[in-house]
Image (cartoon, rainbow over all chains, first blue to last red; front, side, top):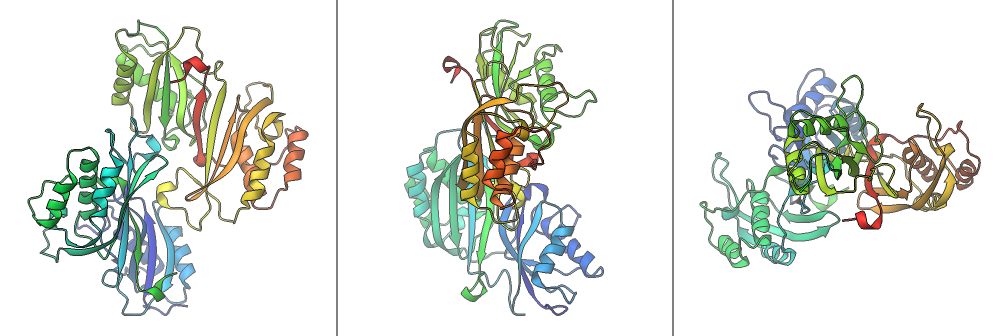
Length: 258
Length: 258
């Protein structure tokens, strides 16, 4: 049973097609954060808590396992009751998957040890309509083996400046450690799976852009390595569009896992 | 190069969420057939051909490989040009996958030798939002082995009256031959795959309903066999909702295949 104001961590999935990204925008456009905070307000007598995610996602990017924390001003709700009550108020495009009580010091962003993204590509001639918001359609043949080689080079600790975009809110440390980076064949295309201790702005979409260009033979493995070894903000690497991208999972310390 | 009015067969995929089924409705609600016929009218100087599908699909049912034929009143278009031109006019929820010239006697419905449907189930606790229009969420645990046994009994030639619903447009022969009927495990749930020489109205959704009830232990294999052996219009078998259902493929004679 949670006390009023005690801290909870929420795992949430959403269909990014319906939102202008995660973060609350000043002009009242629909965002995931805004929509969830409004649902909390209904359950907390109009008091709208600020919720804190593991990181923002851009317009059109989906999530299967985003995590946020909040201290909602309502007592007497078990974690499962929070899940059911929020899902009863939220649109079908946002689903709370799991709720757990966490220490007051828990922070969804600063305590994240590992995040995993997945980017889905469809390589056939015509993209099936049911996949149009969830796959990137790549019309040309892709060299899977070249893509796998390129992806493998990103594992380890590197300066990913060449694979990021400026967000305009100050400089951040461009060093990240990538744990997993692989391209897998799937029933209807390819999936790029990457996990790291964190990601720079638009990093997954630019890594995906480089992978696609490598798969199309327009970028060699050497050129990708060069971009990794020579950090540059003038890099011309393609940024893949958002619709194939899913924030899949966020991991915290061992004892926080389900 | 097609002559004006020569017969073409079109393979089409659509997202059924956006339409009130395949068939043109008198009250002008959006249907797949209506939308495609309107696109043809733009390309044929306002002349709207009637198109003929392999069969209707209900509201919310999707297609990956529906087939229709038409004799559009426009000359000088290669099959690929028809595909590109129609896709340029159609909404993203409908995509023409393939066009081929067929004999004047070809009929998309009467010449179909085999149709395949797939029904996708998601069995986790919360349905991910990106799958909400394309999977049926089954909350209880399902006994896969019981479902596989039940599915296997449908292979062969049977009277499927107990697994159909009245359409109200007269009686049809209730005997159908099922070639494949199987339940497969997938990454995020189960898939029921069935092919037959034809299907009665709502037959796939009622077979799926029976499978789910068998998987939940609410219907025994004997009861399903009983319903198959004793054709009855009073059968109380559940009709599964449309959103997990895809018309996957329609096969014609050998020489018509791509």
